Every structure is written in structure tokens, then in C-alpha cells.
Length: 435
Image (tube, rainbow, N blue to C red; front, side, top):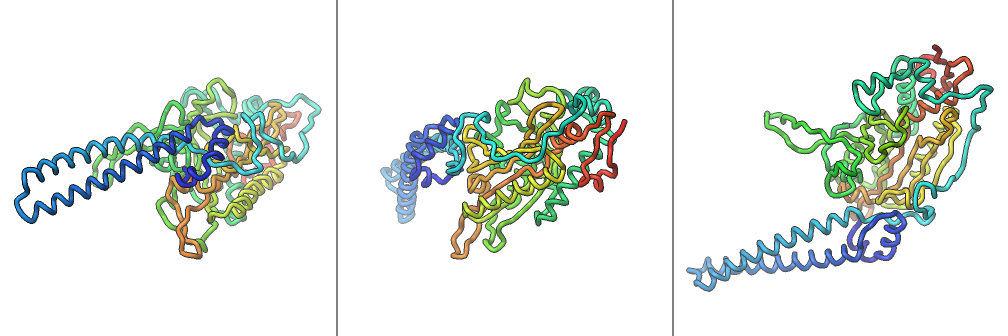
């Protein structure tokens, strides 16, 4: 969410940003609603002052009939204007939460992911003297995944990781956590069951509240008991990434500039309803409802140059891991049409899957500036004593499914076994997966 004063001063740039990000929003309507709510608030303040003045006058003696009638009239008017203000405020907020961040000057302008720009490619595409299998066939042949029983127990997109498959995924997670610790990111295991404000604050609700038609989030239907035995009916949700939990860690707090930047990494299960991907990638691990991931988050001062350097640091660590794993990968500069409303600048990493003959997203680094911080109310005091909103960044350090797929497909052998990248072997305890 942006500051309304900033929106007013940069309305034409924001209109252009909305157009380029495919966001249908009327900025002029928003500004008109802001004028209306300000006027209504002023009217309410004046009416309340008048009501208080009448009350004070009544204390000095018996109020006159005229004073009583005027007091009643003012009270009714206050209620009427307050009701009108509430409606205006709701319309205002519904628009405010959709106002986009103006993307960085070097962000490519495009309509969709087809217009993302390849910024570089690293590694060599694996070559085989045999026809390589995809991860589904490899996993089934080696007994690493059980899709059939996964669907039986969990439903559509359900799966079991078995034996070496489970060991390989946990090895990936432990490798990523150690790498993050080496890079001075504080490891955390955050809650995955969270309140709605964490998801709204981080931008995982498209509007002001959860909408099951568009938000790819699982809501928990059951209520819970408080310590005193009372029933808590507050909405709870399962996170799709550790990002909302990590960003909300400092919600409502004021930090010190000398403590910034704060580097965090979170390991968590992730849950996604994938309602927007109906009919896509219906087989295998490419798109599933639950998986594990190590996520990076950085909280820094309101300095675009510093935030840009930190974003490059984050994507740089991901690239280092891709290279240590021996992947053939490429980096994309995400275009405006493939960016969410809050993003200032974004990169993706994609790894080549030789068996599936496709690129798979295996990393994503985004800079939101203060768009999330305003929603979560996270500020800091700068060296001049001024309170400012922090900037927030995030990066997918290591998701479990797609790097797992890349290892199976990239390091398969003609005999049907799979070689394990050297950097993972101390975490997996095995060098090769055989039948």
C-alpha cells in the first residue's frame, strides 16, 4: 500500500504503472474518494465540537427546549455522516490496496510472462546417450514418490515422498539452511498457521479480506480455544511460503536504523490451493498443494540503492547454490505484466529439466520497497530521529519440488540410477540412488 500523498503527487506515473501491470484501477476515483472522506471527517469533527459545546452550555443551567432539540439534531446528523464516511472509507480502502508500486526504471515493460527478459544463462544442458526420462518416471522406477496413494489420502495433487526421495528433499533443505547461516541470515522456523493480517500485509490477499475465489490460500474452518477456555473464532490461514510469517515478525514495531538491514531465512511447509492453475501441470511435482521451502527475507532502511544491492545479494546466493548443485539455469528480469501490484523489481531463476524438456522456476527475488511495510506498520527511527517505513525484500532460497525434479532429470544414468550432487551428500548420507 502506498501513501495517499505520494499517490496524489505521482498520479500519472501510478496510472502508467497500473496499465503496465495489467491492474484495472481508477486512480481519479481514488483521489475523489480521498477528498470526500477528508470532507466528511472534517464535518464530523465540527459536529462533535458543536455537540460538546451544547453539552457544556447545558451544564451551566437547565438547557432550553431549543438547546435540547438542537442537541438531538446534531446527534442524528453525526450518526448519518459517520455512516456515510464508513461507506466511503470502505470504497477508498478497496482501491488503496490495489494501487501498484511504480516499477524500477530498468524493469522491462511487457504484457505477460512471455515478455520476461533472459538476463543470462549458466551451466551446460546435460547430454545423454539415451533418451532421458522425466522425474515422474524416474521417481516411480526408484520408488521415491507414490502419487497413487498420495491422491488416495490427500486428494488431487497429493503425493508421498518415500525412502531416498524423502532423504534427498531433506538434504536440499538442510543444505540451504546451512548456506543461509554461512551468509549471516538468521535461521527461523516460523508459524505456518497465521492470522489474516499477515497475509494481507504481505500482499497475499488481492483485496482487503480473504477471497476464496481468487486468493490461493487455505483457510482453516475450525475454531480454537484460548488459555481461559473461551472460543476464538478469528480467521486463521495456512501460509504458502514463510514470507508472510517472517515479514510480520516485526509488525507494529519501530526498529532502529543501526540494527538494519535484518537478514532472516525461514524453513516451513508451504500450502497453496492453486485455484488459478486449474488444468495446468496436472501430473508430477511441478505444481502441488504442499511442499517445503527455505525463504529469505531482508528488512532494510528506506534507501533504493541499498535495497537494490541487497536484492542482488539474495539472488546471488541462489545462483551460487544452483551452480554448486550443478544445474543449468538462467536468470529472468520480470516484466511489468508478470509482476504483482507491490513489486518494485523482480528476478526469477529457472532450471532446465532435460527429461521434461522445459525450464522450471526454482527461485524468485522481489523488492517491494515500503509497500508491505505500510500494511504491516513496520517502521524505523533514522539517524535524524525521523520515523520511516522500512523496505522489505524476499527471495525463494530453496523450494523442495523443482530442484528435486532437476536433480532426478539432470543426473540420471542409463542404468536408471541418479547421482547425488557432491554438496548434498553429507546431508543425504548417500551418493547415488539405485533401484
